[in-house]
Image (tube, rainbow, N blue to C red):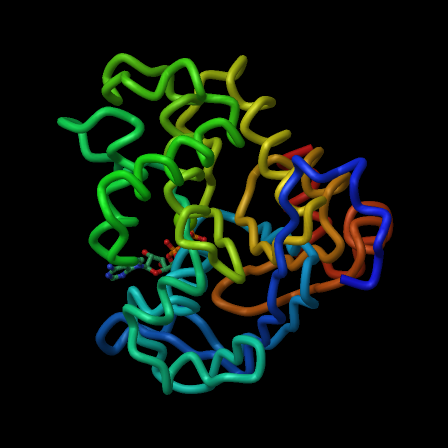
Length: 256
Ligand SMILES: Nc1ncnc2c1ncn2[C@@H]1O[C@H](COP(=O)(O)OP(=O)(O)O)[C@@H](O)[C@H]1O
Ligand SMILES: [Mg+2]
């Protein structure tokens, strides 16, 4: 808006990511507490990577942010609005999520996987939904695969469809839960590059990942979690080059 010389990048859409603030978020499964007083802020258009051992509560945290599992206490503030005060379906339009297993509709082609929710959630016409879905598939590099069913796509291509589907809702924040963990090694890089590109174009992102190279290179902020708590938070340099706690030092010695 502030820049009138935008012709050079006219074909690259930018996002208007919102801020996301977690305030003393606590979560439990029944009587078992799994998150305790988790607080951090993700500035608009920045990428936060969340790292930590298996079982430390990373997935639970993302599930709490868009209320796939209701937090026990605390709050999530999305662009000034309490997420707990929003209707869950409205909240999930504003916060997109991408999972390790792509959760595509197996009987629908890639284009329909994206277009369906545009009709169901956004109430678009058939023609408009298909046109919009195609644009999203082009954006994730899948124009030539739009007519393929998930089983005829590689894991990396399926994950791109899932990302296109989430982007089609025009979210203000994107959550990724180990989005590349189920992929064959040679397909990981392409999906990570796509994710980094979204961040570069202004999306606000919370990325749970085991890809430490990605976290170091792309993250504006890294959060290290262990046993349901934030143990350290800071820049990639702070966490990877100058870890303070024994727990983070031990974790890094195991994964790097
Ligand atoms: N649906 C569930 N019911 C009960 N306990 C769960 C459930 N999901 C996860 N947990 C437990 O919550 C803790 C945090 O799990 P999770 O958030 O999946 O960790 P991470 O994603 O870091 O591996 C673990 O101890 C796990 O066993
Ligand atoms: Mg997990």
